[in-house]
Every structure is written in structure tokens, then in C-alpha cells.
Amino acid sequence: MFMGKIEHEYEHVGIFIPFNECQENFQKVSEFGEVPVLVDDGQVLAQSNAILLHLARKFDVLGATNEAGWDKITSWLFWEANRLGRSYPNFRYCKLFDKSADAGLVSWFETTAHGDLDRLNRELENKDFLTGEMTIADISCAAYLLYQDVEVIKLENWPNVEKWLDRIRSAPGWQHPLDVMA
Ligand SMILES: N[C@@H](CCC(=O)N[C@@H](CS)C(=O)NCC(=O)O)C(=O)O
Image 1 (tube, rainbow, N blue to C red):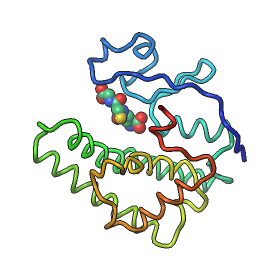
Image 2 (image 1 turned 90 degrees about the vertical axis):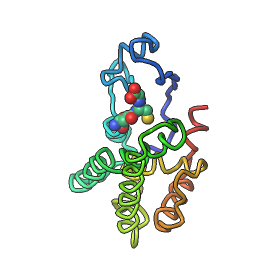
Image 3 (image 1 turned 180 degrees about the vertical axis):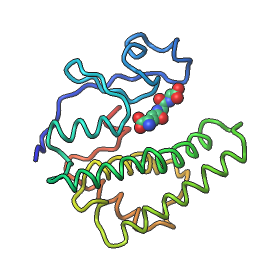
């Protein structure tokens, strides 16, 4: 498995403005008008989970060793996109940046985030990571939860999730997203 550093550069993009006012290079590559976007050797890829799959396969890092393993990873990536990646970040966004958000909507995001954390907590009852070894499934599902410093949701009610996040933080070379993108 590749454990070295993959050379890359981050480019910050202001997204709290209309898409047609965003910087031109971002407008050119972002087919859904969202971050993140990866540009790799001229290939443009949107959607964080598609980017994770691309990097895991290309650099043989944090992937699976057989097809069944890849299938399990894919299943968690879809769950993240459909569930946890919708509930928690939207709740966090409303709490931190959109104080005028509809209260019913905020409450729905909170309730579904709790349900998704319950599900994650159950999965991690007897496991260190979601599919055995640490993979991009863990990276994907942990992504927004690692911003715990803002304490939008205290994770003490989901102890297996807390321990799992600690294991991810202890992985060789791990850095907090805010430090990586500083
Ligand atoms: N499913 C997408 C979600 C990406 C996403 O929600 N990006 C937000 C920032 S976290 C964004 O770019 N929002 C800009 C907008 O909606 O105008 C992924 O995983 O890449």
C-alpha cells in the first residue's frame, strides 16, 4: 500500500456567492457548482466520494484488497452521500452560518443526524473501522464529524463513534482538515 505523500495543491474557492460570480477557473471545472473538485492530470472530478475512490484506486491507498471489500466500501460511500453527509453538515451549517433557517428544517436535520449517528455507533460496536481496516469509507463518513471543535453536536452519546474518530486521528500522517487546507 502506498503510504507516501501524494503531491497536490489546494486552491480555496469562495462559495458563499452566486456560482456565476465565483472565480473563473472554478466555474470551468465545477460541474455541480460545489466544492470539492479534483483536477488530476487534466481529469476533472466532482463529488468527494468519487474523488476518494479515484485516489484510493490510483494510489493504492485506503482501499480494499478484493472486490467484496470494494463493494462494502462503495455501500458506505453511498450511505454517507444519502444520509450522514446530508443530515449532519446541513444541521451544522444551519447552526453556525444560517441563524434564520426554518426551525422545522433545522429540527429535521438534527433528528436525522442523531439517527445516522445511532446507525454508525451500532456498526462500530465491535469494529475498529467500518469495513475492517481503515479505508476511504471511514474517511468519508468521518469527514464532517472531525469538525467537532465547534461542538454542534456533542458526541458523548455515541461513544463508539468518538473512539473511532480518535483511531482515525491517530492514523500515520493524519492532519485535521483545517490544518491541511490552511
Ligand atoms: N455531495 C457533495 C456535497 C458537496 C457540498 O455540499 N459542497 C458544498 C460545501 S460543503 C458546496 O459546495 N456548496 C456550494 C453551493 O451549494 O452553492 C460531495 O460530497 O462532494
